[in-house]
Image: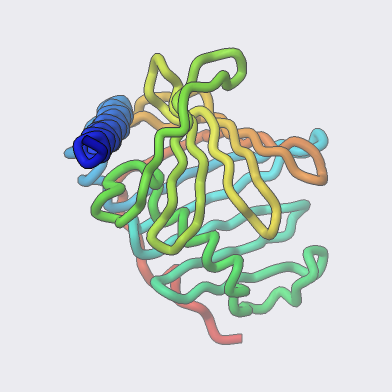
Length: 237
């Protein structure tokens, strides 16, 4: 009798696990469809993005060039000074002006910064193609984000990083992400999604920081434009 009870309990737990896995996959499928569909996302090879960051009344423009899954270069202009950050495969380098603690010469990117920057090579996030990326997803439940229902998904990446992603329960687009960044928990909000070549991109991102709230506004996106890959190579000093 006890054996039958244990078998019944085990069977029930297995069914529960399968139901949750199906629910996670259903949510991810709806998310991918909301972004534009897997075919369109897989067809994106390069992205060029111009953004403006607002902090304490100051506007800071940036330009990013991404070869998806391979390389990324971001140039930011601060009070007439240019800061460059580059990820190229497994390596990274940057140029920091004196006002940002640098010398103005190319220098290797610190390992922790390189690790976190690699996430930008994947512009559509950890949910898209999560099985191929060997990410694991747990459905935590339904919560409120800015007064709206959202599905809370806990993502554990292949590298062991944990990211909490929240999908709007109506649009199935990401409206908030929480993750560890530079030893602290960073919380980023996404809003004002707009269509570009059949793909949805968040035009506004907001992130809290010790210096105040950071607001990123997207001004231009080019999908699959030409890229001169020499811009990712570290120049000699």
